[in-house]
Image 1 (tube, protein in one colour):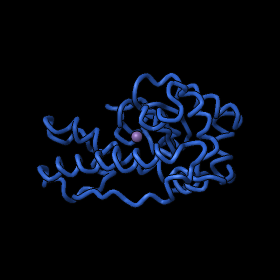
Image 2 (tube, protein in one colour):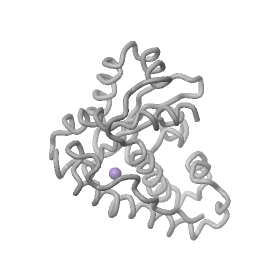
Image 3 (cartoon, rainbow, N blue to C red):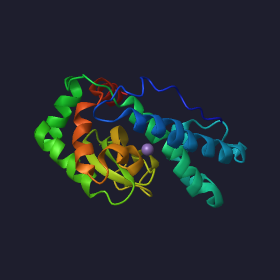
Image 4 (tube, rainbow, N blue to C red):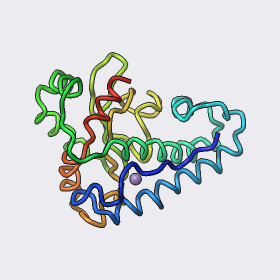
Amino acid sequence: MNIKLPLLPYDYDAMEPFIDQNTINIHYNKHHKNYVDNANKILTNLPEFDNYSLEDLLKNINNIPLNKRIELKNNIGGHYNHLLFWYGLKQGTIISGKIKDMIEQNFGSIDNFKENFESSALSCFGSGWTWLIKTNDNKLKISSTSNQDNPIMGKSIVEVYGYPIFGIDLWEHSYYLKYQNRRIDYIKSFWYIINWDEANNRLNN
Ligand code: MN3
């Protein structure tokens, strides 16, 4: 299996002023690319997993030999999480349709959902992600994960197992140039750049 860094679906400045172009440029070309390069180096030595898809690998991370497992988890997790992140961003979409209905059903209101999401993201200690997750019983839940873990990795790794609808990258590399220590301002800016159309697509997936 050879992982490729896909083209960014927009220009580096497409999320201005919420995420600055310098941050997106470095985040994509250095950080994301690094996960891809590292994952490919490890996968070269795991030919028995050649026919696995990316999601299969993440779901079966516990089948990876112990001496390569953590490093692979961090790097393919990093790749997968960043794919979700980049495609999850777009300016100007409107929350509507099934995602709106399900958020209201599960959290009472959009405002209450946002408050819960912000609070989870703010209390995520160190580097990690906060996700909106569709669980197997078709509910929406918010949960944060450490490092490059992802809700599809399974119950032995994450608290809430399920399919990620969207997530916010809380590693300092995703916001520090513009926001420094003001993580809350970065989190609040996320509401202006969520791609709600993509969220609906993933919900129906
Ligand atoms: Mn990142």
